[in-house]
Amino acid sequence: MAVLVGKKAPLFEADAVVDGGEFVEKFSLDQYIGKKHVVFFFYPMDFTFVCPTELLAFQQKMKEFEERNVAVVGCSVDSKFSHWAWLNTPKEKGGIQGVTYPLVADFSKTIATNFDVLAGEFDYNEDGEMEFDGEPVAYRGLFLIDKQGVVRHQLVNDLPLGRSIDEALRMVDALQFFEENGEVCPANWKPGEEAMSASHEGVAEYLSKH
Image 1 (spheres, rainbow, N blue to C red):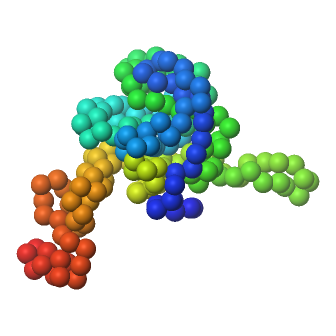
Image 2 (image 1 turned 180 degrees about the vertical axis):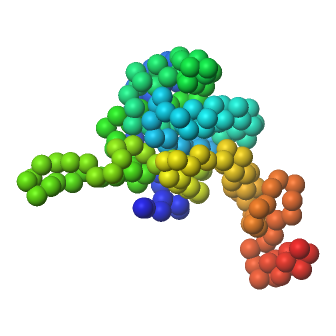
Image 3 (image 1 turned 90 degrees about the vertical axis):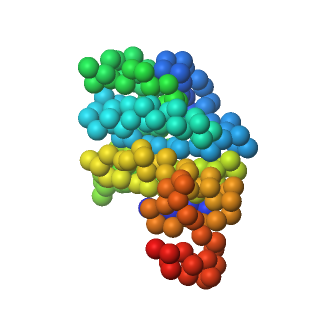
């Protein structure tokens, strides 16, 4: 699996559904460059089991992401029509009604492939016939992208393992703290806690206090 940290996030233009039901063509993360940090996450499929818990959990924290000037964008290999239907299905029926952040339709699986989170790959068998080895859906990948379009953090979970939205927020806080203060964030750092300078002296001083 590719490590994209420190590299420009792969470019794409794709159909998306925004604001809970509006179709958008040629949606791109480029619109946020110079303006916002982005949490771009993949999930396997619409109308499944773990996925709605994650998407609704992101929605519950949207105010906190917005306060940090962070755009949240989801993506799966479903079509825009599947996204729209799921967004308009009530929670009590397995839907995600109420989700307002964009959902990108990676129907061709090219975005998941370029971010290297597709849970399988196309190949040819001994008869020269194309087949797919693995699952034709995305792993639960999450990418924190800075205002220059560079990936600063990535985390990829296997299909059964739901991610922590609080951890995504913590990583946003750590990145923004570093960008604003120049100090680095030690293990388990949270806003309001002491950071340290990126030097031998800074590390020694921090460790002596903890």
